Image (cartoon, rainbow, N blue to C red; front, top):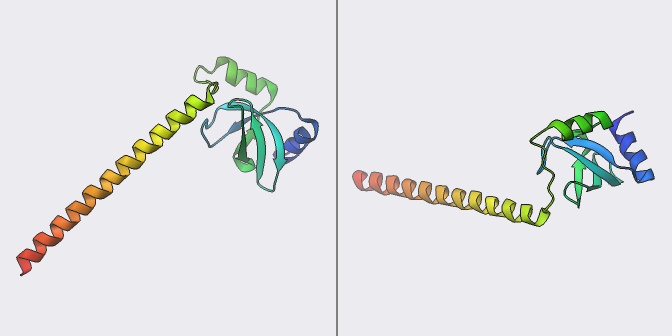
Length: 126
């Protein structure tokens, strides 16, 4: 059965689907979702790991069997479900701000270097 049919059947019955999503905040981690709505290329679902509603691209989903899910979550020491989503969001936003600030500083320094080179060359030409 293809992924979309599995998701549609789960949506109709309200069943959980065990998946790996190859993108997002918990990329390549096993998670359980409950599909709410399905479009051509996306599924909107309740993610039980983060207890939030999210959208997932169907092409980036891998449907897991119960055994695959159990193997990944039972023995994978890196599997850590997000239990405190607010704390996770705060940390994620802090990381984003750091990256933005770093980019801003790099752009500022590059601008200063370019201006320095420009005025240095301009003064030598005059």
